[in-house]
Image 1 (tube, rainbow, N blue to C red):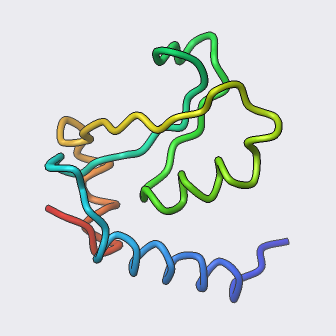
Image 2 (image 1 turned 180 degrees about the vertical axis):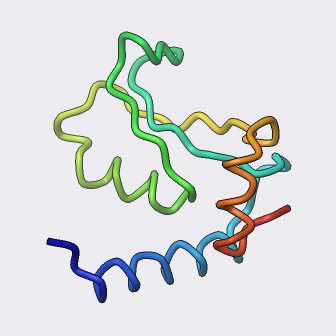
Length: 93
């Protein structure tokens, strides 16, 4: 069952973080938590986040199960869907 009030709080948190975060000079960024020396998405347990804060929190909660986690920042400018969702939540155009 969907918990609307919990979802609404999470969406508000995403909006606030998108509005105030440093986008690392990247248009419509997304933040990928990867393990190891370089990203190997097909052979790695990866997680994708709208905000740096959410990626940091994920690592903090799960570091004990991860091998050398780090955050890879990519631009979603080539994806109209990603840009539309970020714009809807208050992120960059």
